[in-house]
Image (tube, rainbow, N blue to C red):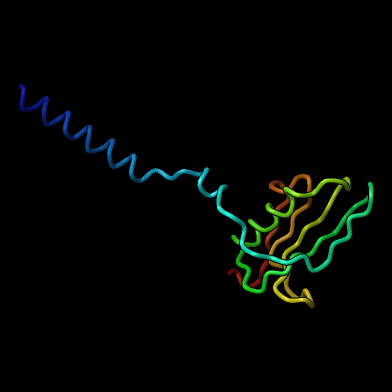
Length: 115
């Protein structure tokens, strides 16, 4: 009986240890710094709708989303701002775009390259 209880206890401890090792901490992803970007165009009229283009030549969908979140956290003023990430100054390809203040609900990443 003691052997069976000890084996059950050992199995439970091993299972809990594996579960703890494999769990992910979502807060770590939020603490990651955004990839570097530069502001290509910025129109933020007082009380109007603004538009911003962020330039990231090597943008992936993940880094573009992070850049939009980073930039959006600094917005203070217009009632609405569309923020988009492009890879080149001619803005031929939009990697991602979102509308502030509802960034998470409006995130759209039409990047045809699917990077």
